[in-house]
Image (cartoon, rainbow, N blue to C red):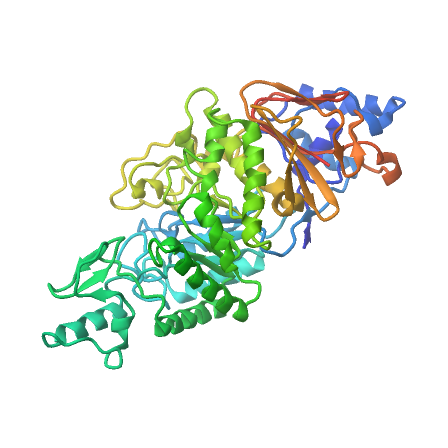
Length: 603
């Protein structure tokens, strides 16, 4: 699927970057003097013997204002390259805290639909949306709790969120935007108020002393794990019977080995696929059979096969909150994705590298090792990188000091430069805060600093007063240097180059070090190079001897608009960059100068 890029990237042509790929901008807008200097520099380069084919010693800055006039050069930027596959950028939404359409303080599906243009407006000639082309809806089915992970009806919409008609309208708008939707499907347990559990309990109460339950009389008694002995994770039912519920007494575990339970699950899948959903996020897959990965993988194998028979291109991602060696094994089930917890959270690989606890070269090596590990279990794996989610503290709280905003940006981009299907938790693109109790991590989307503004939610009842570190969307949307603008650029870069999400990663150890991560991504017959400076200091990177797409670096940095393939031969093309401040990136001979916390993409 090919789409068009917006005019804000036209400005980058003036600085000598090629136009054969979309370009992501840095956080800071240039001045009028910088704009004029960029224009003059490009004109001077055209008058040299090398011309635009070999601009040496150029500096690369950003200019949001110059983009307004870029169209006068008649340049047509290339379309985004967004194949219609499972390698997407998903936006995780907690409907309860996202956008309130009816003034009751609780987010709802109508509110989410109203704000779809924020996530993706369906028109890639604009730059006013995030560019996410997938949405993961945290549970929306009827429940007794605010978080709704205890389902009382698998075929309904929680009344706090609206009606089935509201959901259908939401799905229609997503389809119009080519935004895929996956539902959080909670199969490990139900609510204790679910009719299945209530029927089973009523039946057990009627049994005479010593009488054993009979599933022919009440099939629901086999839907759960009842016992007359209190095992670990079991809760008391009536002094005689106990039931497995390790998460909470009001969340009894389902017996997923029961054939009738599986028939129920298949019917549930049929229902939601008929509503147009594109797949499912599988909650707590590690606990289907606690402590038994093989049994868990068997459930996933069955579920994956069952769903794919109904919808071959359905996307399935499982939550297996464990160490990497353990969750990697779950790929044997054939499931598309397993969330990549090793890179997430305050002590994960990304945060440790950004904080300087681990090396930048170690990040590149971890990418390569992870891909190799997952492929050893299933060569068709689709990694599911994420940085934070509804169970983890928000990333703005991971960093302190004068570089904390740069670090917040850089870490988000590192997640988005990983291969696979990437996930962004709502509000991370604003640098929202929230840690401690779960309610704090699910605070209201920060549309405005005014809690009474249209659409603002009140958040979970037991949430503490969460004081935000950075501005709300109202301020960030008009600040070219904001975290929000940076996230948009990072997602734009990801959507432009399919190599980022789909390519096989190769580590370039010869130029990687404690602060520089250099990786090549190979997708089909195309290669890109990602250089990352993950430090607070400017770094110089020597690319002598490196080969990209069969071309050895020769110091000729191309501005390729209107050039033939022959004219481009033997040189590299700088096709995108993500800068976290006002400093300039530059190339001089075989040396690439990288500002603090920056990413450059070559091809």
